[in-house]
Length: 134
Image (cartoon, rainbow, N blue to C red; front, side, top):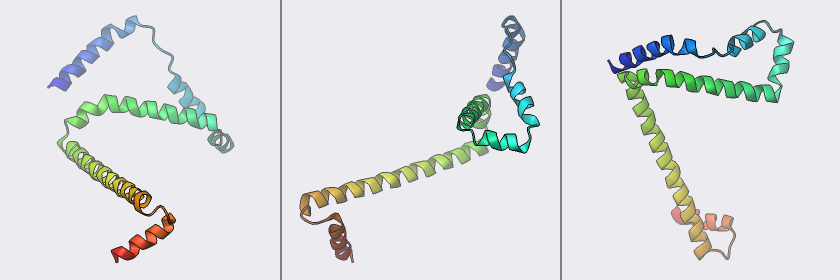
């Protein structure tokens, strides 16, 4: 219900306010028409152009962000999508926890080495520690 009200309000806004504003040039359509029938050599040349690729990537990112803004409420209202997103969040948290635990172990190892074994090389320290764990 609330998303429908939002959609109706947006439609009303577009009908009444937008005609009063100057309409922007449709540069995306112009770009599409320019790239639609390019020959393979031109496409290859564009793909090897770093500036073109950077601009293309930036535009693709903007498009992705706009698409997300327009569908976010639908995704949040879809129980299946919410379930999958919750699972993704669990995976991110678990992965992050594993990474942080590994970082803590590495720091503890470095601290132990510096505090107790700084008279030998780190490789020698690791050999000693690996034989002690066996």
